[in-house]
Length: 265
Image 1 (tube, rainbow, N blue to C red):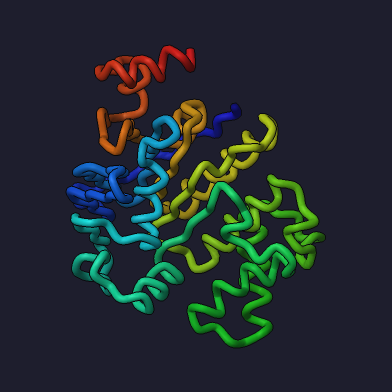
Image 2: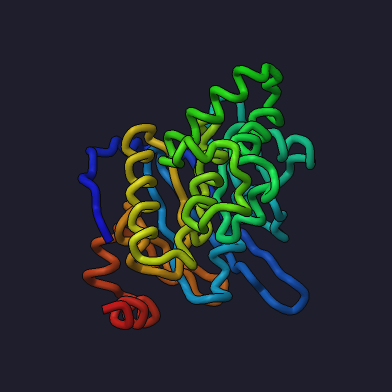
């Protein structure tokens, strides 16, 4: 995969995202067990693990789509306080509309497939309170351009687009309001290698230009190695190892991480 040049990243000592001791059970199945995570401003945290490891469940928690059985979640933002898991449905919706963006593995979960691409982006702006048509159109166009979406397809509905283009519409929708946190759930799954590389290059560029804090979930270690600064390895609902990407890939300590890395090699 193509790597673009890394710009120096300023990482403060105070994390933007703090998740502490999260437990989640689905009946007799424990999906998450005492999971904690820190993400610093401008950082990209990668989360890897096999199917069923809990990584996507954790991401849904961070998007406030689900509530854990126990644990806390905070964002270090001037107008946000307290445990976000305690917010009501309306407060969650507004926080996610304005401060948290998400790109789903399946575009059908994040897009209105028969609405125009620009309309999909404008829908997020509408939730945040924008009502001027010209402003909606201009901001949607700007976000789509930033995601490297071909503007001649501005009014094409996602159902008529390729998988790579659908992911770009999702990305434009997610960044339209310049969120403090961008969540990505397997954003390159199902795309061919060349399209994967283009999507990852776009993410790298956006991170460098806008300093968006990102959390990216993937089963593909190549994806994580390309875009992430740090990585958490999950297995059976637990974090088994965490550290800098190069550290984890070059000198994995946990037997499961060693298995993952050696399988990739």
